[in-house]
Every structure is written in structure tokens, then in C-alpha cells.
Length: 165
Image 1 (cartoon, one colour):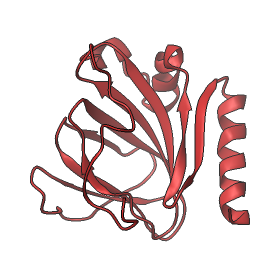
Image 2 (spheres, one colour; image 1 turned 180 degrees about the horizontal axis):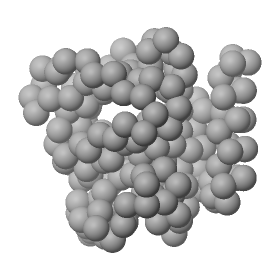
Image 3 (cartoon, rainbow, N blue to C red; image 1 turned 30 degrees about the horizontal axis):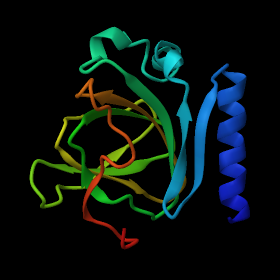
């Protein structure tokens, strides 16, 4: 792992701990960056911190919510993807990121988003998070749409992927 990547992960991990969040999982091995998963029981605290206090009960579609922090490296792209069992809400925490969206397999126009910008992605909507000039930090809440089969990392349908996954 590069020194720069290690520093950004250490910084974000420290920030989350100072904010009182329990980190349920961390993955800093993704070729595009990685993520932190926050304890599900802290979803409202997470929403208060990163989503201007949005009421998590109003977000519940199929029961559970999964709060995460995504970290995307400069000039890296997550896969062009969608999900069968979740919708997502993203809010940029730090940096400027690119986001492409579409209801078809054709990539939409690149939109640039900065701190406090929020994007709501519907179940099945194609999307891609893109690092631009610097590191981007994005808060994410998964809205599970199937209570009997909550979404997980396997619920990713990759239409295109720079890393051959």
C-alpha cells in the first residue's frame, strides 16, 4: 500500500473513532481505494454526522441500513455497476468526486460533486464513483430493499470494471 493511501486511511479511521463510531469492517485493499463499514446500530448517529440528521427510519425500505465511508483514489474508478437488493444514498465528505449514473448500461454524463453534495441512487440504477484530482471521501448508506435477503458485497452487478472483476 502506498504511503499516501495508508495516511488517508489512518486519517479517516482516526476521524471515525473520534466521532464515536464503531468500525465493523475496513477494506483498504481495493484497487480504487476502499471503505470503512460502521456498526449498523449507529446508523442514526452516522446520518446525524454526515447526512444533516436525516431520519433513518424514513430511509428503511427492507429493514436494515448499512453505513459506510468510501475512499476513492485520484483518477481511479469503481466499476460501472448496479444492485438488485439495495438503493444507496451518498454524500461527499471531503474532496471532489465524479459520479456517472444511468438507468441503462450506457454510462451517463460525468457529474462533479463536492462536500455536502448528496446523491440518491435507486435500486437497479447504474452508477460509478470516480476519483478526480485528489482523494475523495464519501459517506454512504445502503438501503436494503429485501428484508429477507439483505444486500452484501456479492450484490454487485458489474457492467464494466477497470480491474477485470
